[in-house]
Length: 363
Image 1 (spheres, rainbow, N blue to C red):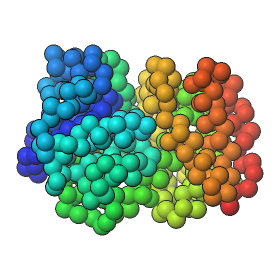
Image 2 (cartoon, helix red, strand yellow):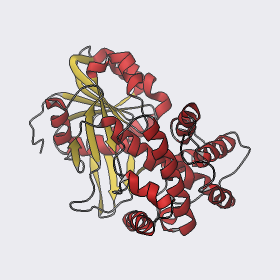
Image 3 (spheres, helix red, strand yellow):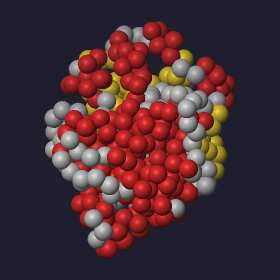
């Protein structure tokens, strides 16, 4: 329980799948956590019954304070030591503004989100109070008010789930403390390569989330289908090209080095074996009910994060004159679906597979 004896106040802004799961686990470990969310029914359910977390090995409820977003002005000034931002990427500025008045001068805001949004947070609270956290392989979903499901089996000594780093500057004691704290949720490490890890997480997300959603597939089917694996390989290689063009030291994706993904795209048999083994390992880890965040958004009729995911990669690629036909096509399909001009389905898979390997591979 609370092994590093941190006694400060923590707020989680966005208590959905990721924020709720992390906040609930931290509260269960003895930390002083308040969940803040805009969904009234969700907040009310947590207040009445606690936060229920459903995992493959059981279900349990955790008592944790919850606050509606509209109530955030009531937070006392300079009362929060750590704020985790866990909202949709397009809500980052709004979420940071909700609690910036309550953040201590010595406090920090941690972006526990996908993509690269640290500059948005820093514009509100300053770079010196901005940290980044990458969460990989959680496979969590908000399945009802006050109820979060994790569709992944617990793996002892598995791949690291959380990486924490300074948005600017080297490793620091607060980064080490945060990594220790998050180890109560799942495996966690401090890093001095936040941007390289950010990009590797973006590669993984843009391989899976939007792609599985446009095809209408769950994640288990996506990782297990040979045609899907070919498209995911192409998506990975395109995004790795864009990261390299920006000078990022992209780290392993699903445990496989970026160079191996590129060699696999070029047809190297050994590299292909490594990539397919990594994708098969994900297939074994996820449960049948696992669906991507983008698929969850489409099902709920919500706006997706396409402009911060595949659309972001495609836009950066265009600026850098790197070819990314797969990312551009998935972004276009998702926008059509959002506008009601298209529907998710297997019909998209054939067209995407035809784009694999098309065009030049670099600038």
